[in-house]
Image (cartoon, rainbow, N blue to C red; front, side, top):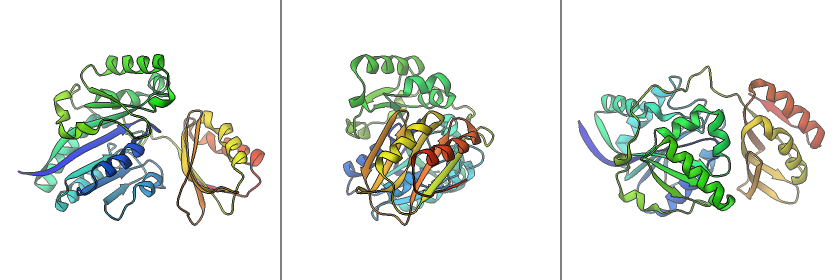
Length: 312
């Protein structure tokens, strides 16, 4: 078995926890290094892949399911195997927000068999949303598993939470995983000295079967429209549908504001300027299954005067 020098990190964290924001910052911190990315999303559209795309980065996208699920596990093993040929300094795997990494070590073993090569696996990093995590972990086994099987927990959005909230989140992290290292992050800024460490020394849970399956995959749909909408109309629409959704993200052309990247997690709605696209598209990840389709259609009709199409 050939041990290669590529340092491999797997990034997990529930929907909207800030994985892509930190990964963008990591790419700046490691500028000049040879970097590969395997980017995973549940939906048909690779929104985060669009954000990360860079001529200096070798990237593979795996969409329509979790890379830890049997529905995509073989594709993940093949992608990892293919990436061994590129002699990267670093390879980052950004899993989907619904990804349960309990079986990541089993997948790495399969990669060794297929490729004949072994990565320098540095650990699993779990991103924990300081604003929403305490509610998420009450209801979602995935949020619990992500933290249980991590080596480093990064508590994100610390600028949006007060001291009492941060203390409660950190206490919950320690309850679920007593040994992982803990760091804080705001807007992608954090202590990146962990890159010099082998995070595997903070291993807590043994490899186990993932909870990801084709049966429990959340429903995702996407909306697209031509032309522009008013930002206040889009905000009213998003506020109306947010309670039934885990996440909304995409790119929209707004009247008077141009193209914007749109991100919704819980009650937080964020707009930031983006590059232009052929048409506006939003991806919705549902808490309530297909029932969310009627909610989206009704809320759009009530709040927005631009025609749209909704697709699976």
